[in-house]
Amino acid sequence: MSTPYKFIQTRADFGKAILTWFKKNDWPQSITESVAKEVNEWEGGPWASQVSTAINGKLDPKAAFLIAFGNFNTYIHAGSFSKIKDINLRDKLKGSKAFTHNNGRPFDGADFFRLFTGLIEVPKKYKTNGNEFNDATLREYQKVMVEHTVKIKRQEMLKPKEFWELFLKQPYTKTIKPNDLDIINDLLREDLEMSREIVLRFGREYGKCPIMPGLKSMSKIKLSPKLLELNQIMESGVASELGKDKKTNNKKVKVS
Image (cartoon, rainbow, N blue to C red; front, side, top):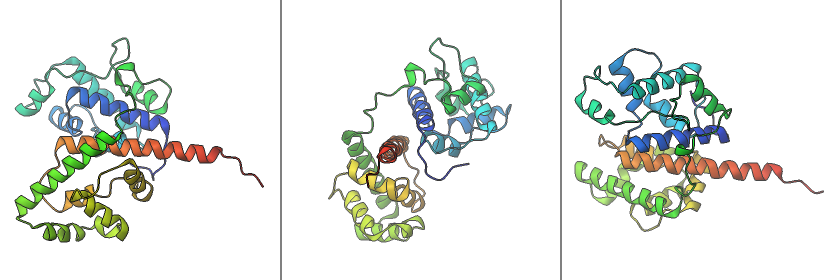
């Protein structure tokens, strides 16, 4: 299950480590669910929705999630994918590396628990340099998002005005403030560049990128793995930045 937005450093570190691991293996976030369903030897997934929430630092998991992550990791470490009937999935797993300690020992469920709770540090190979959440990445995020809107327009044969009208009809879009809708419109038309100021504003108000839900619901076109990856980097970075701001504000001493 997910908790209401609240930054916790160890959860953010866990999410970044998992995202880095997935990127190293060129995996979509649904990989654990796909493998679990094919192998059918353990319970609890981890399901794609859990992985996505964990990567964004917002998961409050039950023990079954961490145990399942350990089972999945053990399966990857064994490297025998004969039980996978889906050829595309099997090809995706070939050459994959398990999540390991610095000494090469693969993580089990207990290790993932220790990592999630901060009892052990993130192994060096999964630590990020902190530079992924930058202006260049945000520009790329906007570019890939705009490319997705072009796909929707072509698929649905929509003119720009018709596209925007359809976006406004989406359930989540109705919760977005008018001023923020103006910003989103400018971003999708590329009349405005995505910036840290904008995404932090969205993060404070909505706890996530408010553009993505509308893009998902307005068309059957799947979001590309690159767009999903950049969205995860952006939301994880925003959560980290807002968490730091909150800590700083809490430390300020009130002077009468």
